Length: 228
Image (cartoon, rainbow, N blue to C red; front, side, top):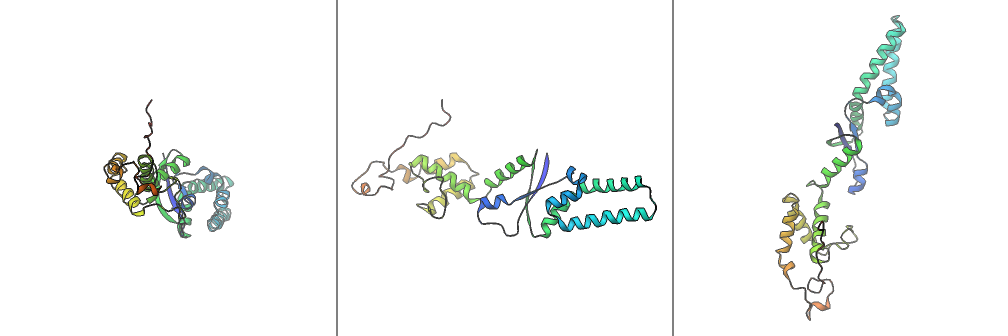
């Protein structure tokens, strides 16, 4: 397993998707490309100050060895050792450069490769208490399946220009869902034992004038998910 340190820019975007796209995953441990082509690796990463320091250090090392009359094989061996050490410290150098520019460390994650680490980090963030969207999305979708209409409708259209029918209700359901560790059975129990769910689906002279309330709404058979 490979460990990655995750950074986000100093001024993170308000939109969670845009914010996630700007995250940088810095791999810990040895970097082969950094060891073989250190200068090129620094250029690709945009670490210009570190590139200048590296070139000056290698130049000073080479000049010092020549001044001492060291054999070319000795110079080559020491430069090779310096490159290997650079490969081991590449992650530390990249992290230090990001922190110097104001990037903030937001966590660590492990995975077999970068793609798996990104998936794992996103999954952890998605179900974290700090992400209000997951709880609201699940609560709204469960409400939709039970009631025939979501608190936010359509159920997958969460945006400022499409407000929910009842912000307090959606917030309360999402908060309770998170507090009970994303227990869907508990969420189902809360909704189905509510007075709202137990209201009659038959229309009357008052409700028939309004098409969006519960009594005037249609009834729906629950989907048979996973049942042969």
